[in-house]
Length: 366
Image (cartoon, rainbow, N blue to C red; front, side, top):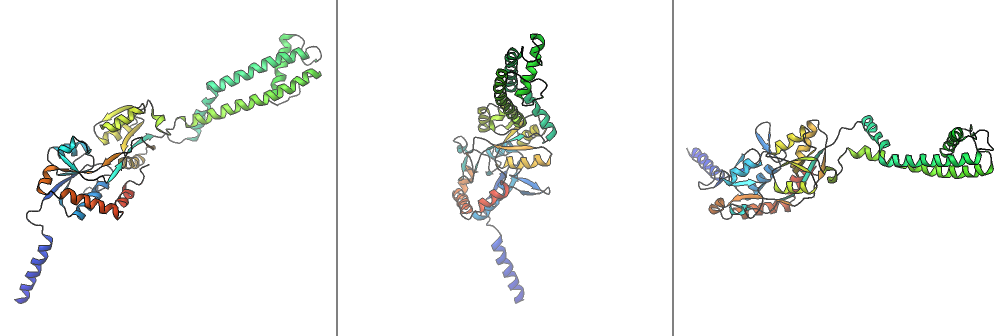
């Protein structure tokens, strides 16, 4: 009997340790289902950057909660502002307007815009063939025209000098000019066939001039062709923001993102959800898609899995402060809630746990 009493006492003591007080507040915490931020693992368990940040924050601040997912970002925001959530992790802007309804923790992450641009598949033969269009570029055509003008002028001079002394160059202009031009071409290109050569001293001195100018012109034309050829090879690739001017870029309905894309002269295709933005890119209806850091990393991995070759290009905007939003009605029941969350976030920075989470989920951000 005594042993039974001891067992009952131990059970009651252990229960007291693990049962929350009756008046403990259970907060409804929302996280949007966004790749890399919050995803379902094996169909049930949630994982991602925002999930890990909140779970660690809740543990360190002793906050009781129920984690909920609410579709994409607009769904979460609507549910939060309608009172369906007490806390929302990420994606509510700490603005004056939003501050009427919500209080915000200190920023735990500074995000920025990243652009996923379609990178054409590498096909060496196709790339080389397309680059041959350099032969028709205005710069190369202009250089070639100058070359042939000099050939014609020098041919006339050589015919004038050789028309009486050289039997290889006909004295009649109509026939002799072709012989002289052929001789000039041979000298200019340093081929030197030897079938038509200057005989008298004046013509030979003039040939030295032809040869020197020919070397210069050939080198200039070669340099023009090589530069145009190289430029054509990389023209189809997107290197930086300047290459996106005039191109269609899909983006989520976010004022900052849309404003930044318009600054670079892009044609913005606005979509209501991030998944719709990615679908535009995947189906190649746009040349690029804009996301925030972290999300861009996840979608870049998804693109690789879908067989889509993309480049991640940094945007100009890198100052989006990411905070945890708490409804002010929740702070009425627990005025110290915001301080507890901020204290937990501070500790996560001090012991480098936040740095660990960033490297775990956002390591390929650039």
